Structures are given as structure tokens and as C-alpha cells.
Length: 113
Length: 112
Image 1 (cartoon, rainbow over the protein chains, first blue to last red):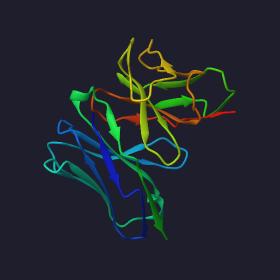
Image 2: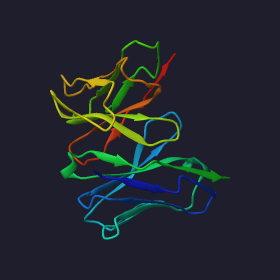
Image 3: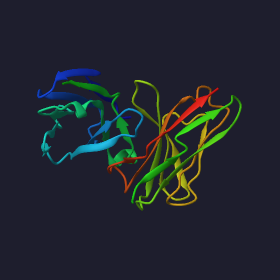
């Protein structure tokens, strides 16, 4: 089955700096890669996603890049703000795996004011 | 408001008791999922359903059961056979396979 590894597990940055979280996946059939943000005591919320026919996607301060050859994708947050502090999860899924998503173990991002 | 709801938010159970967690969505999504989250860990798939009256075991189905009698509802029962049920349970739904999953607010289950 699919295996997703996420790094780092914790990340602390100064307000205004950039943050990068990386994920690798094992199943070359995976074709959908969402990123979720989870605040304490709440359910994860989608912040950005990318499909395998696209190499990069950007939404204001957030961007995701995908390298299918190397089987890795990354989340980039620029101009970080204290409200960006949360746990971020990457996931990978494919139509060949009944659409199930495999999640990374999460990255706890702390943005210091 | 369209969305996915879970109830209750907090649930306490005595050892040996079964308990059912509710999950409802009005997004007209075909697929629904149940995940378990332990402190500091990722999401592990318990059960999923891609269509009414059909569901499949996920990675950690032992000690759990589900039903999918209606498109909008996917209740999860935590049975007494689940040896360590204290956790945060998340329900999600998606339009179809390999689509964005929308999560509910979660239910925190504590076994006393």
C-alpha cells in the first residue's frame, strides 16, 4: 500500500519568515495530493491541493510543488503569521487504491511573533 | 449551511460498553470515512464507504463497526472489543474517489 513520510515533525519560524514542509510517497499511481491544516481540538481543513498533471500551484501565501519523478511534494508558506501556527498534514491518494488517502504524521508549525 | 457534523463533541464510556458516534453530512457526497487520531500522531483509517449500503475496512477496523443505510449518515460504533478506544475520532466525506475530503469537528472519546 501507499506510504507517506512527512518532515519535519516540528518547525518553528519567526513571523514573516517562510516555512517549508516536505512529503514523500511510495505509490507511483498516486495522483492527488492535498494539504490540511488542523487547529487544536478541531478537524483538519483543506488549505491547498495539487493533482499529478500539475507541477506547482499557488494560493496567496501558500504554494505546493510536486515532483512526480522523485515522488515528493512540498508545502511552502511565505510571510508567516502567528495564526499559521497549527498542525499540517499531507496526504496522497489514487483512483487505483479505492480513493483512500494516506496521511503523513503531521508537522507542528509554530510561528513566533 | 452545508457541511459535516459529528456528535457528541465529548463522550465518556465505561469499560465494557459499546458506544456509537454520529456523523452526518449534507454535501451530497458519496464517500464517507472514519479516522482515529491519537495525540501527536496522524490519521489512521478505520472504515470507509463509497456508496450507500456498502463499506470497507480500513487499516485499523478491529473493534469497530459501521453502517451506511443513508447517503448522509455514517455512524461508527466502538465496541467493547476495542482494547484502547480513548482517542479523537474524525469523520470525513468526499464527492468521489481521490477527491478532497471534508472533515467534521471530531468526537473525543474517553474510556473511564
